[in-house]
Amino acid sequence: MIKYLFYPQNQEHVLNMEPLALRLKEQGHEVTFLTSEEIFWQKLKFGETHNLISVNSVKSNRSFYLVNSLYQVIIVFKFKLAIRNIHDQFDHLIIGNDGALQRSVIDVFRKHNKKTSMMLDGIITDSSYTLREIFKMESDKAKMLFRFFKMRLKKGLFKLFSRTALNTYLPSEVGWSCVDNIFVIGEYSKRVIERRCCKKTNVFGFGLPRFVKKVVKESQCVKNSIVFFTSAFKWHAKKELHELQVKDIELLITINNNLDESLRKAIIIKVHPRESLDDYMHLLKNENVRLDSQTAPVMFFHESNKLFSNISTCILEGTTYGVNVISMMNHFDYEKYQKSFISSSAIVKTFSDEDVLDILLNGEQGVEEMCYFINTEGGLSDVLGVIS
Image 1 (spheres, helix red, strand yellow):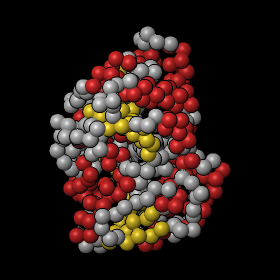
Image 2: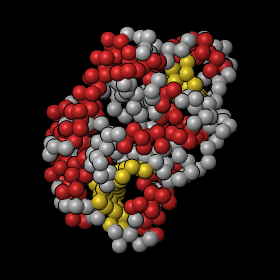
Image 3: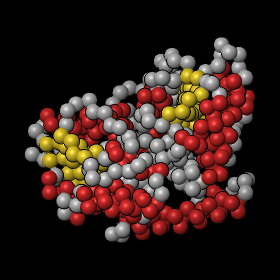
Image 4: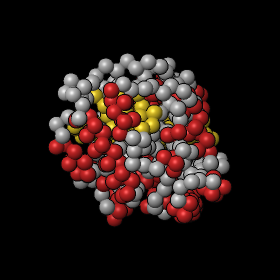
């Protein structure tokens, strides 16, 4: 019998982990879930009864991602003390990402030669260019060169940080942690992670347990609303991109408001967990707009037939539900993102007011290349075969 510890941070992680946990129980293994809801301020809902352990001694007055850096360091320090002996009870750790708290648990397990696996939900993307590609561009080469060397330095530092004993207190990027296995949503994410992960880490593009279903090619969503998924630009110190994002949201709202009343749609702004609602409160002056920061993204795929964003990877998942997926590039420089998943034909792009209007009135469903990004054929059995 193997004793597994699952550590989900949000509801998407639970949706991936719970089917796997149930199958492991059926095989006679012991399963426990570690929760830290009072740190992340994200309520987790389980469909079945499981052994649960919670780090009750560590709390935050608001989401971990929204407190200042000093307070984050204090939380991580307290958390590390609370879980320092957690390896005694378990053989295999399974996490949903590798943020600071997750890396704290990884370090404990690895220090005592215990197995570690990560199930990365969402599309992991890389929009970096080579020097040759930059010199061929028509846009401002100086800015792109500055961005190139800045990203090279940033990634070099992240790689260095990830190998130090202080890695949990330093910034990082998803996929840098040294774990035994990483399971991702599809082939595209697999290739990105393989370029940055540890050499000894096995990366699998099986797809994840919650995607074990057929792709829906025709939209079956009937509710008259659209959702805009924001990205945590300000949290990543990209204030200028946040301002462009707000401009696109305001444009979407304005065009929607100018439609005949019978054609207007409710607009839901799905605010990223690492963002503050305060940055979007001014949008509520429009009666058709509401903000949401708690609902799991997957729930919106059943509520809307159009998903908007700038570069949020969440929207691509909507293609598996037959939802219209749109990337607003009205105020963004599309050339910078042509190497990312945004360039996929599965995503419709808007560059002008007329494009947005046409989408609101008609819509267009991109269906090509979806399986390259999201593998809906594998998932549960394949993941189970590796970890059990």
